[in-house]
Image 1 (cartoon, rainbow, N blue to C red):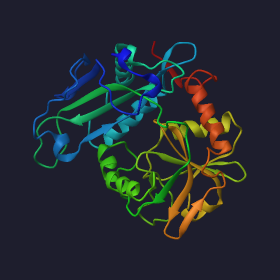
Image 2: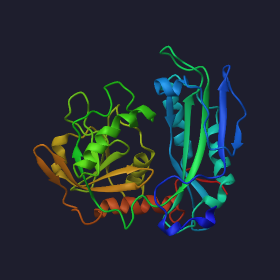
Image 3: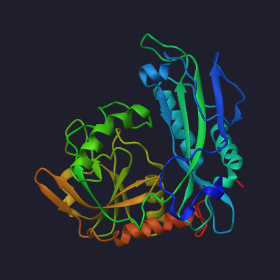
Length: 340
């Protein structure tokens, strides 16, 4: 199958691969699980996931390093976050080590679909869990399925990471004390109308504010924010409604320990935006997406880094983290997990 793919021009989309991993939870325990070849999911029409959106998911990548090994980046943190998400939605946690075991099994089984080093492409991995038995009353399911599939994807940006224009959203992404800090499918469903509206208005993304006061920066529908101050500090918004991005946490470590920067993880006021030198979105898909302009009802906020290219400090962060992920820069212990 891999011979039919043009790695250099691969888009960020779904390509079915041969194997995926499935394990089921029933009568209070998980079965042994294993690889299957059927890409279809068969559910009862009254399954909990279909009625009450009881589902959580993760996203990570596998790729070749410069020295020819297939690796994943910090899958233990994805495992931890999935279990935290599952606990919040009254779903069973996976047994210790099962998540990483499933990731390795799927990547090894689909080894020929891992894009070659240097193409900018990677094997995107999607683990997810859902309630599967019939549930008609509003309550948690009793049975669950955890699955992992993968798909080769091209670079998130074609032609480089050009700064984007975003807008302050009129909508709230999450409620105070809600589910904004877990990776639940329902959170992403809530953002779809807002992102479509932003696209129609000519913006690439939304900036969601805190739902209580709408004076503090939170995140977009699928990424955390990073900001660079004019005296070269890295600032990241802090809130109990923000998803704890693995990329953002990694960038904070890189900034402090590799680039010698001061790092502040704190509340970020909307009124502060005009004082930052650079801004960006961070996440698994793109690592860092630079932001050049934020549209508000009171006018545009244009960052000094401009709209032509990624700001210099953001570029250093991006290049360093990418170098660590691909084995070109020595990684902190445990960050890069070898699969093959």
